[in-house]
Image (cartoon, rainbow, N blue to C red; front, top):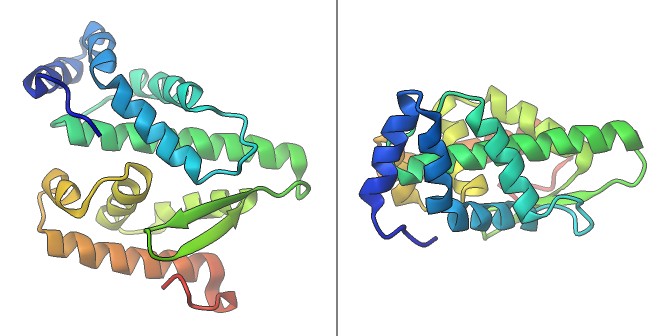
Length: 193
């Protein structure tokens, strides 16, 4: 991801957004728009190839979620993590709609990967993943969201969460194992753990 020319400007705008100044959000988004599109493209890479959402549409739908919620981001990385979560919510909502329309037919596949091993999901499993993420301990859920959905590195996540890199690694390993068990139980072959 590329950094804006003046990262201090992003932080100042985030403070203004926290204070409830809507125009600050309108000024913030153009500064990080390229990064938001990169996040959207990264998330859509994990979706089925015939997905109807494109990166631009995903950014715009996530923006709609962001402007209607209270954003409490400390800096650029934290804001992008929040945006990634909003994008995940859009994709989950989209999967719910798709699943409701299909009810078992035309199963689509997505991938959850950390670069080493991949686990493929049908559209209905995306919903199960969302439910399972909500059951994780809050910090572990954030690590998964930041790492997988926002594409953040361990050091970036550690900075946002105010913990050590080692804590992030430990949370990632625990969360992956728990999610795999929650989604597959005894059926899995163990390759993603």
